[in-house]
Image (cartoon, helix red, strand yellow):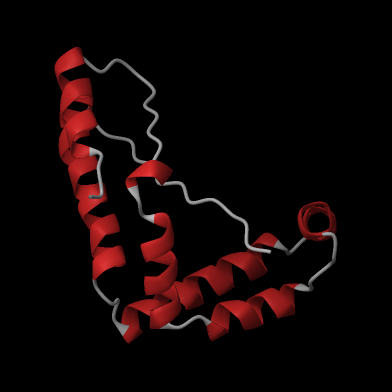
Length: 130
């Protein structure tokens, strides 16, 4: 089955929160509405593959990985199996997933820190993908 999460985080000055939220929403819309370039996809897959390999360098991390695999999916996939799935992702796959998950009813927003009411209202009006 499919499972996962997508989190976007940013550390910004409180005065710029609406501006940054607007930029993030525009990027999500772009991922949903336009095809990403093949070069961008290759870079993303290389980055993710490298991150996976680096995260599994110690026996503790590897044990945690295998335990997580069993807990989440009930079966154990090897890191190589996951890397194969990453390598198999296509531009069309990215577009399809983006169309599925980048919808208003799937968005959540959380902010840590002092944000004035005016900024909160602006974010409420901006934080929409429709």
